[in-house]
Length: 182
Image (cartoon, rainbow, N blue to C red; front, side, top):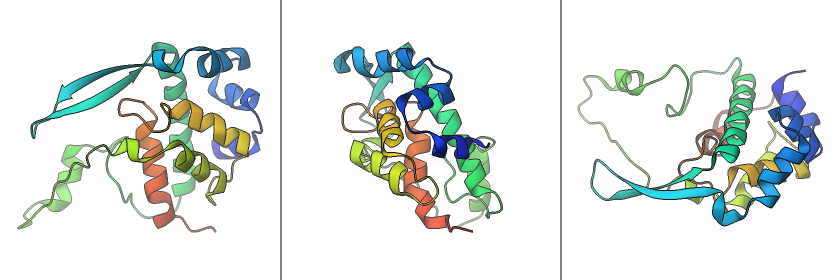
């Protein structure tokens, strides 16, 4: 079965743990036993435009779970995108860079460059949970959607600094635009 089919067939934390290469006890410990306030280290980095960006870096155990979830979701997106035209978004994609992003804009009179302030935190727990449960490309079991949202979110939002925030925000923001069921 494909990565997407495996995820769609999952119905429990145990199934998600297996897909991510963790024991159910290990995943449950990370999600339910480590106190919420100890899961992330928060610090600020300077932005080129001035000001600071708050980063929430997950502790090693959680970071490993998030990396594996991210890899699984990238596989799912690749399956969903088969036969579709090029990407609508450019960020956080393997094989793409600032150079490949700039190429279509060469010799343009105007180019608008934006940095959306606090982008990842605008995706709250309910939105992540609801997307994976209701989106036509995923339609995951409610328990599986809950586990994914628990892995991905810090409290009630996707954190800036998590390995899975980019792919999840990309899926939520763009799948409805270019996904049409076959």
